[in-house]
Amino acid sequence: MIHRLAFVAALLVLALAPNTSSAAQDQNDQSVRVMTADLASADPIALSPVVVIGVMDGEEHEMFGDIRGIESDADGRIYILDFQSSDIRVFDRNGDFLHVLAGPGQGPGEISKANGMRLLPDGTLWIHDHGKWKMTVMDLDGNELKTTDLPVKSYSYIWKGTVRDNHVAWKRASVPDAASLSPSNKGHQVSSSKAYLVSHDAMVDKIDSLAIGRTEYESFIVNYGQGRAHLGIPFKNLPPITVDQISGYWHVESADYSISRFDESAERRFEIRAALDNIPVSKADHDLFMSNLTSQSIDFAEAASEIIEFIPDHKPQISALAVDDDGRLWVTRTQRVNESVILDVFDQSGIHLDSFSLEAAIKTFIPVRVSGTTLMAHALNEDGTPQALVFELPARYAK
Image 1 (cartoon, helix red, strand yellow):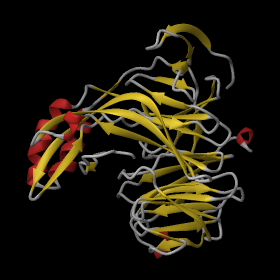
Image 2 (cartoon, helix red, strand yellow):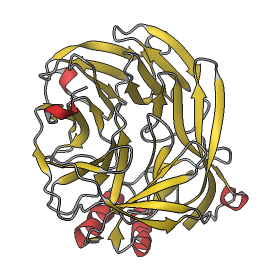
Image 3 (cartoon, helix red, strand yellow):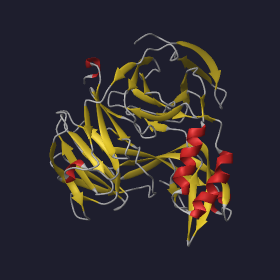
């Protein structure tokens, strides 16, 4: 997927068996355990959607423009955030519409350009609203409990942050190097930044940050009319990262199947690795990319033929990371052509628990959400209709 990024010359903030292990050295020459997961021989459990919400034509509450959040509560009710209509709609466990929890506006209990939300174990709904530059906390009756200024003011497609201990919100952020603040007029650009995880404790209104290294992001600058667009290079996105619900964070640092577990001091504790076949970038991938850009403008069409040269030969193995309320790590593998999406589940110590095969096309770059035995995923059907998909996990995942 291609994202147009506004260039900001400031802070851009922002089943069960033990695996074998061996020793490795991290960048600080400390011994790090390597957990080797035998995923190639795993037999994924097939899951089909039990509820599909979203249609091309139907009642107003059934149609969505751009789904940016899906959550489920203890009673199985499903909450869907639509970015385009700026509302949160509630459905029962069977997918039948109940009511609108929050609608568009600038007042209490209203949202504007919210691009993500999290339903916490205490029953509060945290809404990341970059239209208001606020984090809004509501109860499940739609009453606004609290609003706080976003400590990191940056645009992104979807908020992939974490809220820990029911009051500390986390988000990835970066500060670009000086050279990255003066890009070339057009063409290929490599931006280098210092990377951070920024936290905001809403209880005491305290902001903190954790330095997690450096990142590089490749883009292609296109001038069109009076504007400028930074187009991402396909399959060269920033590697996934997620803050753990308990402590520390998980980070993918290469295109391989390799996930590192870091503690609260950004020290690497162990690494999960798996040997999987490379996923080649196909001609169909190239054709789809060209089609998407050429349909937008002549300037983008001209840029597309140049961007193709920078697309890698292989896709990264991992598309997204998520941690559920019980601390399990959910890894979304990059989808292979004409194959199901595979999710791998690990416990806090890096032991592989399960793998699941989703019999549906989901947006793999958006992390899945898991609440007890309910797994939720974002999707676009064949005609491009945004949908929320709900899957039922085995009973052992019940809270």
